[in-house]
Length: 377
Image (cartoon, rainbow, N blue to C red; front, side):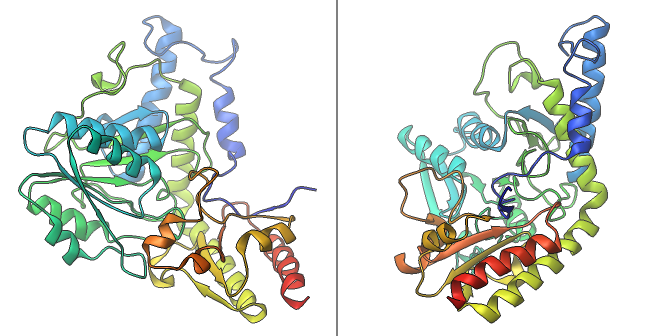
């Protein structure tokens, strides 16, 4: 019997409806052609990609022409930061981001520092939120881009993206948002919020791994220098034969999220509140972050005087995490929690539980029963 899956923030299973759609673009019986080919096989594949581009654009209220396909949010983050930094370097070489960003952003920034760029890494407040006053104070005449994640993958903290975007826009500075965790959880409307670049992926929203997109604002025009050169695909900004089946899967997953976000979010909120309420009655814990500013899908909890690794080792029937799946091995716990001011002891006692579309009341009850045996023993 498989463990109860409470690690949706790491990845989601592909929805059966998405998988079924993808199958139609793989075999000889389906539309397998190269979308760059001019014959009917290519035209059919191109039509499917155009529909998927519309579906992804619809979720964030963008124009389809503003969507550039990539291999995932990591590539999108790299393309946004390195591509914009290189293209706009005549305006300046200063970048601002947060210490709690995904490694794809932090490592890209560190790489740019080696090229002579200057990066300011802002610390969050103790609740994980960015202080607008601190951001405003960090802006310089040579600041070219600010990069802030919308929904933190470890804590679920939701930043005030609209306020940040309005601040950067008023200074003529590009604003990049890592929104890998956002679709299906929070509203994104680029017609109302002046975001210039926005990273997306499919595998956090019941689509396949290995496919993502970068939104690039059309008015005023934002472009990036390509990282991958070749056939000039994706308006010359990301070469490579388009993976039709993966793109179709991403489009369908975004389409489903657009339709089901409200009801699904409410269901997950109820499960989260039930889980947290019951857990508080059997264990001494503290929440990392602010419940009022988090998505219901992610819950980061500190278990007092207990090691998170030891807790998870005692409950092999639960699949949860102690930090981001992207941190890799050999790290000393969560750098996100450390940036929020937690001590080493507090970091090592923290567990991330994340819920999703296929989480049921039965899953929650079984997980609580397993945890109860630890704390009552």
